[in-house]
Every structure is written in structure tokens, then in C-alpha cells.
Length: 544
Figure 1 (tube, one colour):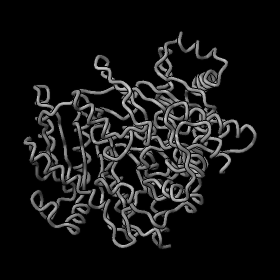
Figure 2 (cartoon, one colour; figure 1 turned 120 degrees about the vertical axis):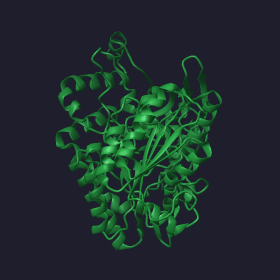
Figure 3 (cartoon, rainbow, N blue to C red; figure 1 turned 120 degrees about the horizontal axis):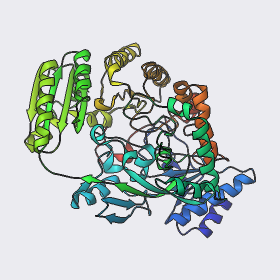
Figure 4 (cartoon, rainbow, N blue to C red; figure 1 turned 90 degrees about the horizontal axis):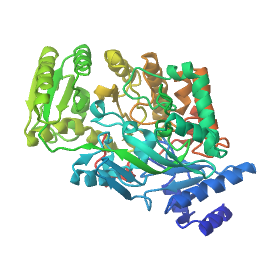
């Protein structure tokens, strides 16, 4: 591999590294998996990315596959940011804001920019990106786009895909394309190109025309579905065409993002109203959530934490929540936030209050900033659980499904039953408005018994989610961890359709192979990290 490294260093402006300690560092991301790269490239510009992709393509044409994996801050929890070949690390150099358009309210950025840094800059201009993930302080925009991440504000504002208006993408062969919504006339020009870009447009257009009934079957009754590829909004009924929705959430398997144009929303520091409801049953919780999510004015956040998570936080740090809530805790705590203080918010606030009082055993309403922060501590307290370790036992990220809201009670009861069968302590939390409620069990992956529990949990959890009509990948993508379950979710026919999309963009399989396709449960077992930890993000408070 030294010849490859020497060749690339000669032709790239950015640095190429093969040091053992660097390869060891980049062998892990935020997941329970590990896979060491052959070499690391720190691209300084798009041309470096293009040359690297072209080099990999030319080798593949001669039968030698050296894959490419793009990486931001490495916070991914599914193994999508690790790879055995060339690792493109964007956060070192390609981390700039390129343009801030005050008239269009858009911002153009490079993929390696920190999400938190961009958000702070936008705040100074009275704007923000609403679908920010819990990890915004230590993740990158490129990673958020690749995963189509959602956050606490997504139930009102939508997912990351909603805000990506255009991309510059380096294709597998090194060509660079710009994606945006094209008119029929503009699409016809693309279809006539003799380049790889033209081949992609023709192939995707034909696939959508011939397989439109199958494409419709990819839809799930959930707020966001990141399993596989999103084909639903590529070609609209008016004939317009845009590859952007397809690239977003593709995790570097269809192309490598080098620039992104993002729409922003007005940011206000106006006081919000936060309601906290305490529920004695999952049935009442489900009814309250369903009715809140059926209103015209949606909450800006709808978050859940159960009594078991609060009990564990209280056991670890009795002083953390004592000024906010004392045991015994209600079975379920629901936090409902409405942002803004204009007249239009008064009616939904009044309606939401009536709903909570109808189903909850107790309701607390706060508008003062200091009290808002206090109540949010309840939800943020899960960071204590995520960051805690007991010897070799760590809070382990395994699942990220989402279910239809009318199956919430069944889902919660199923999770509790599953944890009991594995003799694991229960604790649930998440963005219940998105149907994205999960857990991170304490496991020691260095022990055979806990490794067996991890895989039993993976298998049984995905059965549960699929049987309830949900998705195996909710707030982020499939990565390697959920790839073995993708065909189970969609069935062989839809799975073959998704494989065709991958083949169109990546005929030699050089773009992040093993992500979405090509990873089995046996492969995951072989990549399992026995020393899993959160060492790479302890500069920040872990969030979920």
C-alpha cells in the first residue's frame, strides 16, 4: 500500500498518512465496530477528492478494488465512517463556510465544517438549521447530510433532506456534478450527456419510470425513513428531477459530497413554552402523542423519557435531578415544547394543555428561560447514562428504529418484554414525536455472554420494528450495523431495486462498500469492538 500512498501524495495537495497509530485511531467511529483503513487522505479541496476517486476507479477497471470512505468527525454509530481502503477525512481542511446568502437565506458549506460552528454563525445572522442532531457540538454537516439526521426540532421543521437545496458531488469515476431541482428541459439536456453523469441520469430516469409502483412501496408510515435510498422525491409529477434527495442519506455509497447549499430558517430567542406531562400508562401516552401530532400547529419538540432511565440517573448522581423531580417517578414523562410567543401560538398552546390534562396525571407548564433549562435537564440527563461506564460495561448504541405512532404502546411494551427476556434493565427515551424511541443497554462486549445478548437484541428488535410497520433506520442511516436487516425490512424485490440504484452510481463497488449492502451478521461479529468506549467525544457531553 506504500506505493499507493506515495502516488497519491505526489498528486494531491492534501496529506496522505499510513502511520499505524493513525490507522488504529480511524479504525473506529461511534459504533461498536472497528475496521482499519489502509491509508488516510486529508483532502484540501474538491480536486483532491476528484483525483482520489479517479485513481480508485482506474484501479478497479484493472480488477483491483481500493474502496473510499468519506468521514467527518467519526460520530456515526453504525459503522458507516470506517472502511478498509482509503479514508477521506474532511474535517481537517474542507471545513469552511463558502457563502452566506442573506437574500435567499441559504448557506454554502464544505462537508467538514462542524455543525455547532455553523449553527453559531447562523445565529449571529438571525438564522438556524432546525434539524440539528443531539451531537451538533461534535459532529459535521457532511455527516448529517450523509445520514439525513433528525433532531428534537424535526417534528415541526422536518429532516436534514428538507434543507439541502443543492450539492456538489464527486462521482465514483472522479467526475463532479451539481445537483438541484431541474425542469423538464434541463433534464433532457442531462439525459443527452455522453458522460458518466448522463448515464446516471438516464438509468435513474428509466428505473423510476419502469419501477414506479415498486418505488411507492418503499414508503413507510413513519416521519422519517433512512433505510436504503430515498427515491420518492427524485422525479415529481410535473416532470422536474433532482438527485439531491437521493444523495442525502446515502452515506457516501453513491457519491462523495464536496459542497452543500442549505436552506435556513429564522432563529428567535423569544421565550418558548414547555409543558411536562406525567403519564401512568403507555396507552394514555400514545393517545396524547397522536392527538398532539394531528394538530395544525405542531410542537417544536416532543420528547419522552421513562421512569427507569430517571431512576438510573438518580442512582448514578442523586443530586442531578433533585431540584427538578424526586422519586418515585411517573412511568412516562413527556416534554412538549412550542417555540415563539406570537398570537398564533396561543391557540395550539391552549389545545395542547387540554390534551395533556386529559391524559396525564400531572401537568407542569413553564415559560421562564431558567425553568425551561431545568425541565430540559430531565431529557438531557440521558447523557449521564450514555457516558457512564461500569468497568468494561458501557452504554452500547445498537438500535435506531422508528415506528408508526399508532403502534407506540405495542412498541414500548415489546421493548420492555425484550429487555426482560435478556435480563437487561429497562430504560427508554427519545423523540417520541418522530416515533423514534430507543435505548442503549449496558454491555461488556469483551464477554461472550454480553456479545450474545447484543446480537439477540439486534435480531429481536428489528423483528419487532418490522412487524409494527416501522423502519430499522430512523434518525440516522443503515451503516454496517443495520445492513444485514435491510432485505428483511423491504423484501427481496424492493431490496433488488435498491441494489440497482447502487449499481448505477457505483458499478465497481468502490464507494463505501459494506454500507447498506454486503455486510452480514458474521461480518459484524468479526468487526465487533471489545474495547468500545466514547473516548473520541469526551471533550463534549454525549447526547442522544
